[in-house]
Amino acid sequence: MKAILITGGGSGIGRAVAQHFAAQGWRVGLADINERGLAETAALLPADRTTIHPMDVRSIEDWEETLAAFTKASGGRLDVLFNNAGIGQGGPYGQIALDELDRVIDINFRGVAYGARAAYPYLKATPDSCLLNTASASAIYGSAGLALYSATKFAVRGLTEALDGEWAADGIKVRDLMPGFIDTPILSLRADGSNRTARDAVVDAGLEFTPIETVAQAAWDAVHGDKVHAVIGKTARRLTFAARWTPGRLRKLMRSRVLND
Image (cartoon, rainbow, N blue to C red):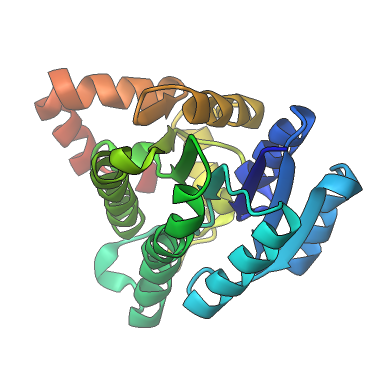
């Protein structure tokens, strides 16, 4: 039985991907710092093929413990590590508290880097395995008002591209997801000193939300396909087009800070 371990499995994209892979008969490991969320996701999955692993992705010790426990349950298999855990952060970069800056970097990138490093031996030992990372449409072009979040997702994109080349000889595929706006808890973030959430900004700007089921299907396709980056949703596709063909116009758009007015 194939096996996938999902960080950020307590909600949002992680939960949707867990449901999708479980429906295909996979064993699913759910990892998250949110134990209540883990229990809620697990209740949606077959009990005999699901394990839960409370952990903090910023801790290499947690990573090692979780991977050891999950692969013990899976009979040694790690077909996919879905490095999905992440947090949002918005507002003027010059006003971000330093502890918040550290927290975003540590969860969004250090956690992904730790996961990739700790999972490598297990992925290498499993034929045709895949490391799947959650990046973002914000990794296509730096997003004004989301500078730190965007920077961490660019780092995830860079790691994905580098490891896709480096690990090919080991039979490990490395992929990432670049979704546009998904209506998940991450959009509940508020800019410093503001009562408006990122969700409010998306709605006010007239942009669309991509159904979370679309992201789950894209994760499945990414694991089984040959493209390094999965660009998901109309906003992400438009941003990809603009970054390539009309970068000057895109730069003006970012300077206008549409999402932060």
